[in-house]
Length: 247
Ligand SMILES: Nc1ncnc2c1ncn2[C@@H]1O[C@H](COP(=O)(O)OP(=O)(O)OP(=O)(O)O)[C@@H](O)[C@H]1O
Ligand SMILES: [Mg+2]
Image (cartoon, rainbow, N blue to C red; front, side, top):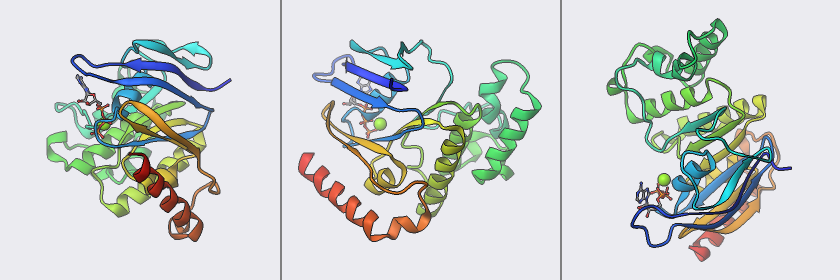
């Protein structure tokens, strides 16, 4: 049985001529799956459907064989825009998922501290979102999503606002944290190289349909030198050429 399964999903936003159609996607526990595709093809919509934040018109989302509850529990979601609460400090934003259930436990406080450190935003913990750069806000949103160590993580271009070096560091950090907790991850990106490095498998979306799926045959755990290896380059170039043909 798959950990997360989307079967025959379709969905249309109001006034949209054609939305998502016949989406089938299956993720094993611990699998990292990337969604690639042009702007406007439906990646964010698909992510929200998979997380139970939108209701499909047909088809269903199954979590360990059971229909996803709404609102879905035990998930982490990083939205395309960081969606922080302006009136809370960085520290309180990160702790929000725990604070919603009462006073955060000492282990949650330690976990929040560790995440801020790992994401390089420790010194900003008493700042408010309006005092942060776009990339810093993204990192706060990522820390918040990881706080409860959710078994299922949805991330919508979480590294888009970051410089290349920080982006690579956070890719490695995310893979490390994901592996520690056997997290299943559905991750949207525009970047073929990012998808290649992170994913066990990927889907390419075009005009609301999955037009290509593939397993990424690269060694795990991934390591920094892989990014410039001949195998990696070869696979990434083939994928890039294929996507150019498809889209
Ligand atoms: N709330 C909404 N109401 C109406 N139409 C919407 C809404 N959200 C998205 N759409 C439309 O649905 C389509 C898919 O949008 P979506 O945000 O899923 O694309 P995307 O692939 O994530 O794009 P991008 O890469 O630019 O983030 C677009 O044509 C968009 O205009
Ligand atoms: Mg989007």
